[in-house]
Every structure is written in structure tokens, then in C-alpha cells.
Image 1 (cartoon, rainbow, N blue to C red):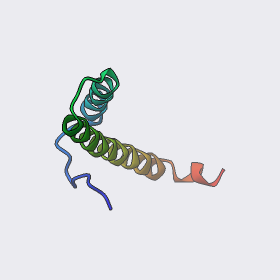
Image 2 (cartoon, one colour):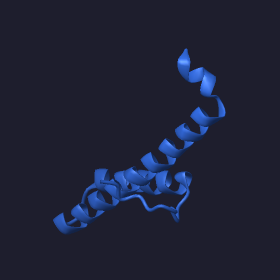
Image 3 (tube, helix red, strand yellow):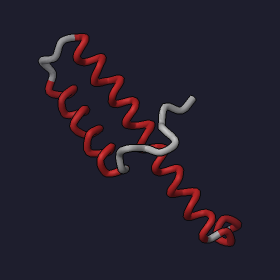
Length: 71
């Protein structure tokens, strides 16, 4: 099950930076349970988006150098 859209609206760098901000806010504490859960859910979405971008990059690298996969 993938929550990443077919055409992401955020770049990898944007998603990674927002994810880092979510982590900082969660680690800082002082949030209500509902706020924490909302941030956690957003963090999960952002992590999936980052995985999407990294998977696409791996696919492109593999396609560009198919002979390297056999080593």
C-alpha cells in the first residue's frame, strides 16, 4: 500500500526538510495528543514520499547502468 502520489507535488528535498521539521517538533514536545498524532501521520506520509523518490532514483540508475547489476 503506497500513499505516494503518481506525480508528487513535493520534491525529495522539500519532503525531507518537512519531515525533519516534523521530527524536531515531535521531539520538542509540548504538543497535545491530537497534535502529536497529526504530526506523526504527516511524518509517515512524508517518509513514504521520500521512499518513492529514492525508489525512482534507484530505478533510473539501474536502467542507466544495467551491466553493473550483475557484479
